[in-house]
Image (cartoon, rainbow over all chains, first blue to last red; front, side, top):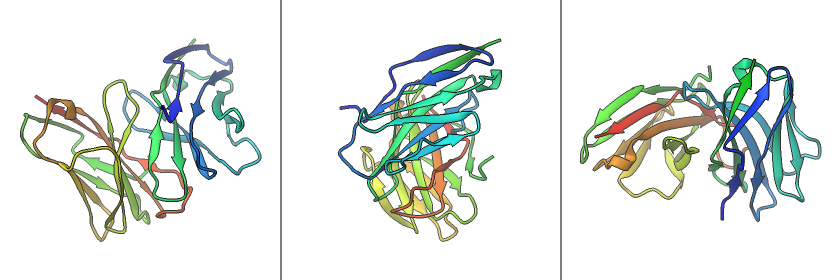
Length: 115
Length: 115
């Protein structure tokens, strides 16, 4: 079974609009962490936002927020006021348990911001 | 920039050869993870090193091996290269070992092409 599922291979959004990138996950651990990374065409993975499984409030970092629905095992990324520079691949990822920091990534969503 | 550097940036090898990729962690980080990212896929965890010891391994054969040095820089070695080893290899460092929630800071990657 897929640990991280991103069902949107590609998304388009108008500049200045908000967009939601979907992510669902599968784990039996009680302690886990969820991440979103941005990967521009240059290849470097850029950390955007983190949500711990015990965090009661949704994480926010500037224009990024994580819509964490634990019962549904979903961790959607919301980008507000999209900018042209937001065009990139976006990966949802999960770290399980309290052991070593293996992070499992989804297959990614390619976001294109239209002027 | 994350402060994590990788060398070389690009590399071309032929089947059967051996390759060594290098990663310099961000200052103060004692944990490094290596990932393989095939074209159009999310990164796949290879292994992690914590204080010079392998601290976890993904589903990769033994011809993928690694080292971490006292200054916490790291090497990924791949023997008997196969065509499917062609990928972007990412290293990521983090400031603590097991039990930490800290995000991983990724380097720019090494793009390996096997002919």
